[in-house]
Image 1: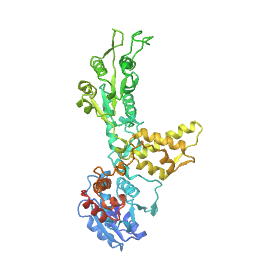
Image 2: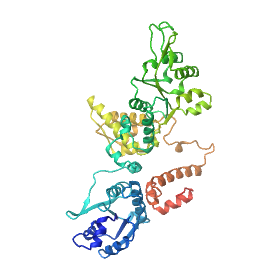
Image 3: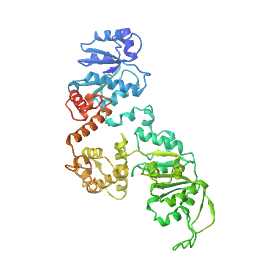
Image 4: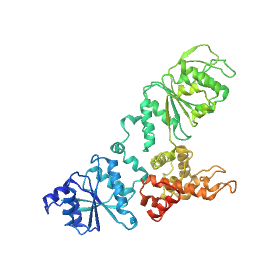
Length: 491
């Protein structure tokens, strides 16, 4: 399988035995049963080339016409390659031995053969040149199939060379998923503006890390000051926020500034905003509206220039609806709302985060005199199969425990499983631990499980039934089709 390039068409037109072109050169050196050519040239050039090539090989030659908006459109090229592979291997994927010829076509076309061979359709790779002849290509790395959407983004080059310039201050946030990229792009746009920001996301998703990056990308000259609203005793909240005068209450032996003063000309990060009591919400609203505060026990008004970034694991609009959070304060803070995705929603990021966090743990261990550790393939599979309800924080702590408890240089499957934590009474898979009776209906549960995995498989393979069948352990694309019909899942 290969694209037809300009050099191939010229070789056919000249009919020069000394310059056959990459495709004919490969057919002269290697034996194939079938030759499948992807052809994206306009006009009537396909038929003459096909006829010329058929005189040079006993293989069955098939031309697949492809319409591209440009010869370097990575996503279009990838989709054409994937569709052609699916068509060629339909019903016989287990019996096909594929060879992808990298030389014909544009560099973008070469890259897509490589990516497809390393992810979805294992294939031998070859290249050819007049000087070196036909050679096998050996690529000493693997690519996770879950990264394909990210690799095929229009900014493929940018991903290969590093973080785009406008995201330079966000480089500590490891990511490749489109969802996370969109959030960081939003954060980069709002960072230079001195408007309040509300970050929503589950616990452990990195809300403070994002807030610090926003501050670093801003033009503010003051400090970044963080406070956890849920960790302050109710009676001390006002003093923590606005400070207090000497003698304002028992134990106030000296004047003390609050976090608003400490963050003057900088950024104040209010973590777990939803835990703030109603009476404290009123005072916070006034400080934001007026741009001034008064210390507890004092009458002096102090002007402050503070940019507030708040964060919460709650759905704040629901908190407002339920009357637990002031509507006026919510809209004052939610000028820009950033929704951090959970780790399970960040397709393609898990592998990156595992390597990044393990590297950081290993560096810290080495500084303390301990040996570095690596993960066995089985241990990686254990990590990949986990749902990570605690998100990145849970992942980091799990890796740290595994490094501490493992005996050898390589963390085994059992050692990784022992490092995983589950809450008492909660199974990682609640489907397997529902109480018997009490309305349990096994056919419904089986249908839910089947629909869940069938939909995921079809989405991840973009409707390629042969590959989807492999992902869910079914014998063939026809078996998958039967399951899709049985459980009413649209192809």
